[in-house]
Length: 317
Length: 139
Image (tube, rainbow over all chains, first blue to last red; front, side):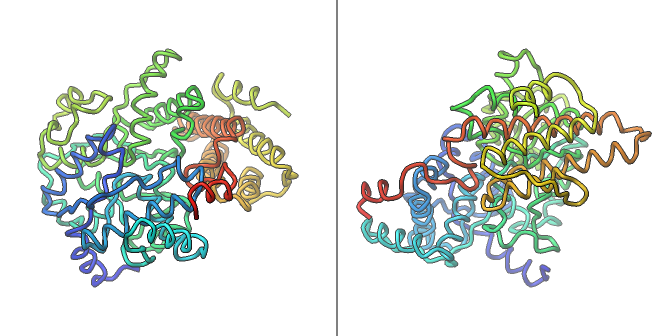
């Protein structure tokens, strides 16, 4: 159970955090990076980008050697601690967030992971990261606890005015459960089976959350290159389920899911002649606009899924 | 039992009854277990064989929990449709059950066909021999 002291402590701790954008937010997910920074600035939360950060190991390295992936993630944590002098790292990308959490777990529980990390860290000439030295959080935690939900209510200008939103969390934010010991703790902790932090924040911003049973289902991201048709079918099913649930917008928090939903929405139309109209928007873009930031300021025009006209029509921009 | 291709064609073709949704989900999980040399359980969990099969599939392979919530939501929607058949939302509940069954069949079926990619993002396994990777890196 979270006490008032915990809340105050987290608010202080999360006010200034190390920022780990990861590779996706420098490339295909630039609008997520832009909107995350814009929302943080608007809320007075400070981001210190980690100096000289590297890839977290993503899926590619993990599939070849999980211990090398653990080392790569540990180097990010080490840099956050020793070069950026921070003890909290915020990673908006679900893949990065997941991998940093997994590294934390492996370094705590696996001798081999510790030995490999120590050996490579020495070879690379940087401090070896020790589990427990840095806390990894998601952008959702950062806003929810670093700024506070009550305070966020006061920042909403115009808001999302009953916009029907399906919050889509994807598969990496809550799984596997054992690498997220802070979740499923009751009170205001996140649920791994029915995550709700994004729903909570968007509801504060005025959105109407729809019941969406595929909110943690796989988007087919891992199959995109090997079996694109399968990915298209999985995404199409998610888009159709969201529309059937009444959603006008799918809010995302993962760049892989977001790109997959956007690209396969177009591919489904071209290959399967299946058209869906639901818009795909990062939750930080929605929050930013609800606070009165312009669509351009949150990078809405840079999404593949064109929702600028729709947002204007809804009176949100 | 229907093949994976037949199952995929079935869930993609048209809307199913609640019973058919559940059967499709069970069948794809049975395929998964048989492909991993395991005897599919006849047990039920919380009244559903679907949930028992999913649990069996995830034993020793936590990454298989990536489809746990889809199975649970399918069981939930099955209950909604069958326990309240006259409810005003039965049509949309059934449609959602069908989409859940479709996702499960496509997802697990896809994994059966592209096994060499390794496991899920959330718990991948090494494709190369550890020793090979380690010797290349000199560790």
